[in-house]
Structure formats: C-alpha cells, structure tokens
Amino acid sequence: MPLFQRFTLTQYLIEERRRFPGANGDFNALILDVALACKAIARAVAFGELGGVLGNHNGEAGGSVNVQGETQKKLDVISNQYFTRMNEWGGHLAGMASEEMDDAYQIPAQQPRGNYLLVFDPLDGSSNIDVNVSVGSIFSILRAPQAVIDSGRDVIEADFLQPGSKQVAAGYALYGPTTMFILTVGNGVSGFTLDPNLGEFMLTHSHMQVPADTHEFAINASNSRFWERPVKRYVDECLAGKTGPRGKDFNMRWIASMVAEAHRILMRGGVFLYPRDTKDPCKPGRLRLLYEANPIGFIMEQAGGRASTGHQPMLGVQPTSLHQRIGLVFGSKNEVERIERYHAEPASTGQDNPLFAERSLFRT
Image (cartoon, one colour):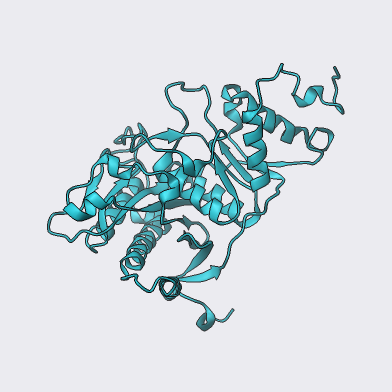
C-alpha cells in the first residue's frame, strides 16, 4: 500500500476517539507518549554495543538486582527511565508501576496528574539482548480509582490491583528486524511498523486475529520434570504427533522472549505455556501478572485467542500484590481450552500418557 494511504498511529487514535464524542484526548496523548518511549528504546537497542548499552547494570561481574531477584541489564535501567521520563509530565497519569521498580512510581509534585495508571515491563527478554535476539516492551493502561482522581493523592499499591478485565488498553513494542507497535484499546488488535524515514508508526496490520487451531507450541522443555500432570499430558500428546491421540504433528518453539513468542502467535497462531510448576514451590508461576500476563492476555483475547492460568481465565484473576507471579497459557483458542480441560479433569491413574494410547508401543 502506498505510504500516503496508510494511517499513522496518531490518525488511528483520532479515528478511535471519534467513537467517543465526549473524550478529551488525554487517552490518545498517553498512548502516543508510550509509543515515543518505545521509539527511544528501539533506537538504543539498535545501536547495541556501539551505544555502550550492553552488559549488566553497575558492572559486568555482578550487576544490580531488581525486585524480581533478577540481574538488571543496562538496557533494563535505560528503558525504565525512558518510560518514566516520557510519561510523567503529560498530565495523563495518576501513577505508574514497573517490573524494574520496587514500589509504585509517583508523578512528580510539580507535574499535573490525570485519570490513568500505566504499568509496564520496559524491556522484556533482556537476557537475550547481548546475543541480538528480539526483545520488546509491554504495557497496560488502567483507570485510576475514583478516590485517587478526586483527591489527587499519591498512588498506593492497592490502586493497581485490578483484574485484567479492567484494562482500557494494552500493547507491546517488538524490537526486531523491524520495530513494531501492537495495540488494543478494546476494539480488536492493530499492528504498526516504525517507518525509520518518518519516525512514525504506520498502520500495517489491521484486525489481527489468532487462528483458533495450530500445530505449534512453545514451552521450556528443560522444566518438564517440574510440570503439573495436565501440562505434561498436553506436551506428551503433542510430541507423539500423528501416531498419538492428537493425530497430527506439532512443532515446538522457544525463544525465551515472551514478546517475540506472543508476536509469532499473533501473526500465525500457536500456543505458549509458562505454567506453574514445582521448581520453586514458593512461586505460583514465573511471569508477572500485571506487567506481562494481563496485557498479553488482553491482546490475545481481543484477537480471538485465549489466555488462561490453566485453571481460570487470565483476565479474571484478582491481583494481590504489585509484583505477583502467575502461570500463563495463551494463544490459539482451541488449544488453550484443551489445556484448561486437562486441568479441570480429576487426577487420572497415570494411563493417559501417549505411550499407552490406542496406537502406541504399549497397550493396556
């Protein structure tokens, strides 16, 4: 399509705003501020070693550790600063929360405050940055509680503890061969590609849809000994291929960058599993509910897919803490629903392994 026939992100947001005559433009302006932060991060990522941004924060040997117990990369810190600095001044936010910060981020006293909350993972997949694998940023927008709006008080942790169904927008930026910005404002999912000549995100993917069926799944198989039985059953059935109970072959993928995994699934289908396991019994999952699971879940649901803990819909989970972890399954609807059924079934006697299936090596 010729360039002049494409919408910019700004034009797209104006079109969306026309559906709400009473809107004052703050919501659009907030999303554009988020997009600006993503452009800045994309530039830093693109320069890599030339920009002196690779390696651990505060030294190669150890590096500082964030609230998640993870070693921070230089780009983690830089990306977090881009998000906070570019979104604290516009008057659209009552507060922010980030995977890289222990507590809620307060809007500076000298800046006006608004009606929304922004939560984000400033650089998802940063463990891959030193080897030049695609990384990204994930964000979610919530309405601030009315008590915060009316009083103008500082935000507290409880203000952010809203289920994913309360999100008013979510998206991610993917820093790969091209930089893309994926967005839902509750009216489907649209994808924008950064035009490096104009410095603008251009609408390139309208009405994105996740196919209901798939032959691809993504999971970290090295953790298989820690999986719960329903997950192991599902993966075993996929690996059994045409000779197993599914009657078809599956391909397995694993990038260790959830944004990249989500984007592949959004573009061509698939299912991603990072389930709760027994590797660390103190953690009810590995991914962060507010910064990763909820925004990706909202995007998937808006694109016709499904997101779940395995036991319940992801967007129905009531958060209990700012940095809460959770198990996550998302992607092609029929596959996610199958995994949910396996979790809902009573514990079996162990004879549901593909090795004991009708067309298998061992029969019972």
